[in-house]
Amino acid sequence: MSGHSKWATTKHQKGAKDAARAKVFAKIIRQVEVAARSGGSDMTANASLRTMYAKARDASVPIDTIERAIKRGSGELEGVRYESISYEGYAPDGVAVIVECLSDNRNRTGAEIRNLFSKNGGSMAEPGAVSWQFERKGVIAVPRSFDEERVLEVVMEAGAEDISDDGEHWEVSCDPAASMAVHAALEDAGLEPGVAELSMVPTTAAPVASEAEARRVLRLIEALDDHDDVQNVYSNVDIPDEVMTTYEG
Image (cartoon, one colour):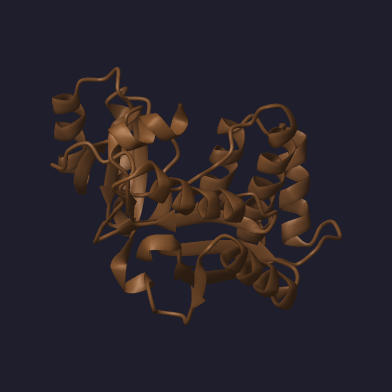
């Protein structure tokens, strides 16, 4: 079992508040459309769509908005076709970064992501340059109000690999193929799991020792995450709690 690792993986997602709410909704709705397009509108047969539907509901996206997105994705309504694209690069101080996008224009998105790296002290890299430092994992958040030993017992029996403390939740990680089984086991045990999502989990960490270094790295990550086409930003930055506290202050 790993220890406290709040900043071992940086995956910035905006909270659904005020002006940010519309941007969050738009990003999730794209994911719903793509899931429906790739696997059909029947959620009983489309696991990806079930996951995206649950994610949308957790974010308080209105049901009618979700249903329209499913219809656009399945072709029942006219809509834009989005393409999944990943970019790799480096933030300042050698921090590895992976950016996952859904775009209707690969050339435009690529140029804009490259510009964000450049403007914020980072650099784009060739495919595979940093992805070897990450593993694709299923990740499920469980409220910290539940006893850690109880959560550990349930998830390990269901096939989980690790549990860590991200400061707000117990974060359970597993092989992607085991995600649904682990999620179901948590539900059956009454442990109120969040949505089971696929995440890029770093296998190596890039320590950041000072507030100045943290600012440089987080400025790039936040700029990338603010782009409309960006769905997820992953990095292997490791910021000590005391440095992060100073930064947030």
